[in-house]
Image (cartoon, rainbow, N blue to C red; front, side, top):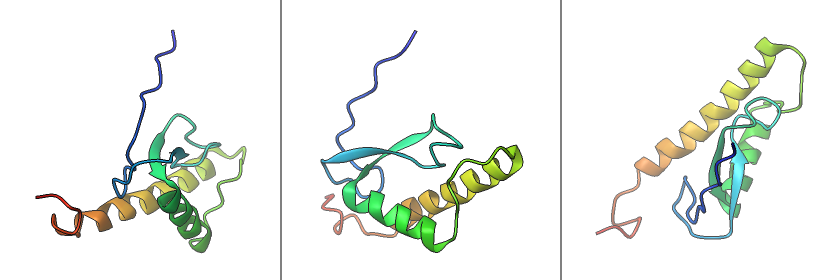
Length: 95
């Protein structure tokens, strides 16, 4: 049985609305089932940071290396989320 995909309308990082892409945060070859909704800007920023950190998200048959690569990419996403928490509620438009 397949569950329907939820309709996501906000970026998990910045909260922007559309267009939204489901990003394979740990790499589609490593954690294909784990996705997060990103706006185009955050998606681009995420992959730029992954490249700058020299994280290779290409497939490798080595399970240990796949987990290491996925974990490194997840750390980038966690850092991005953490940086959003530093913003004050007024900067986000929250009152």
